[in-house]
Image 1: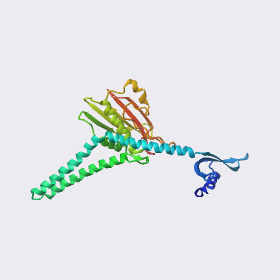
Image 2: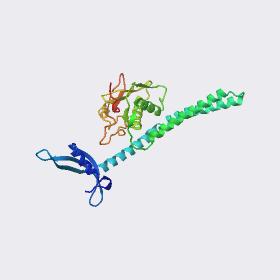
Image 3: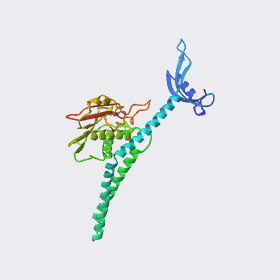
Image 4: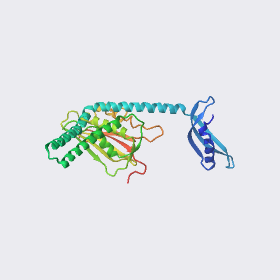
Length: 315
């Protein structure tokens, strides 16, 4: 095996670290096979001592992981495609309510501009009131623009990126994307914890999970006269925050109750989208634990936990 030019000094550096006192070093490196084809290898290097305890040399065990990493990359790309398609599917289901949500600020902006025009035509010119109406029109158009930007971010095809995020902001944006309650009988309530540390997540993927759970809850309540949907955030297990979505529906049917203990077997027609917050083989899972329980007096609570940023644990 040969080291490519850019890694020629890597072996010497590993040897120096072992001589300096490190007993074992595990790392991945790129090598060239005899034919010149590249190979990705996992290497475990350690010190070899003689009976007197003196360093006699070093030992390196290499494992070809080229195929393994290629398979992981293919799986990652496939997951990205599925996530992207799932977002488009969610947007299709939300199309009518989103049109209504956009129509409100745009209609308000038009009305403010017309009011300003009427004031200008009526004379004498009231500059202050005209400016006020125009400022309100600008505010409404900015609101509509914000909704469009949120939608573009939601459906954008991109690499999964975990960053420190405010979970309460994620919840509020997911509710906004849900375009509010579908009828006058529905109440969407939030119980958001205060002074919560940031969570390290892919914001768009967690929004998608919340959207699916909220729509599942609304679907479960069907034609009930009174529908209550509650989204809660709070401190969970050490190092994690708890997020739950509760509905006041009839609950999960007994014949499928066993299957909904697993995220891979969603109990309702729109999926949990637990495929979205998946972890790479070498990283901490984005969703640490998930499950469901009965709501009181009726309904179901679905909950999951998200890791907080380092140093942001419990008091």
